[in-house]
Length: 303
Ligand SMILES: [Zn+2]
Image (cartoon, rainbow, N blue to C red; front, side, top):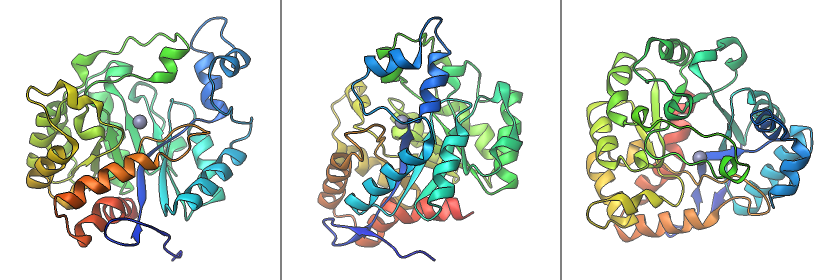
């Protein structure tokens, strides 16, 4: 059992596990370069103003480990953010098994469970890869998750991938495949699989709540700045989002996340400050905060 690292919070020292950190490895950019004729990694490097990752994933893993130390973050789920980049996050997990957990984007149309044996959550983006979460090709991913007490992350709602836009990569995302309601049947068919819907449904807040209310194995991740709130019919602030989510889903099925992704910004502590303040102002207990900020994620990943 590793020593728990804690961070200052309105409740006092709090263990924090981030359910949503993108691991933008060199390989990630190599794969993106391959998605547009003529685009090279060298050109990507000149076009983005982030600290560019070195060719091997280990130094980036070290940078993230130091970043978690600096912010008093106990653990982070690192997401391989394009299909084919799972080995980069696995290298990070091998270097720091007590700090990182491997999540990886998968396209069920090219699914290979063998390469995912050490991955703890498969991240599905139905709108990006243009399939229905209800289709047969998704079944094998849920079976893989069920057999290994793993999770399946299903991105719903509005999807915009900043780095793809920056690089002019084709992004023909199909929003017809992004409704959380479509997840109900498959979540119910696999009650042993923890299903994570990020960003409170990213615009489908009501539907994400309905899904989670119907399926006890559905979890909502709180990550990002939640800009989707501007789509709501009546204005909604973060505190009201949490209040509604706590009423319907409860504190045991909310997973704190930041959606951190690049350096030099590193770990986006502002998301933590805002969410902790909103929850504290709602009168959330220390026990509930412990669940939201770490224990729920650690529990489902422990299988
Ligand atoms: Zn994200």
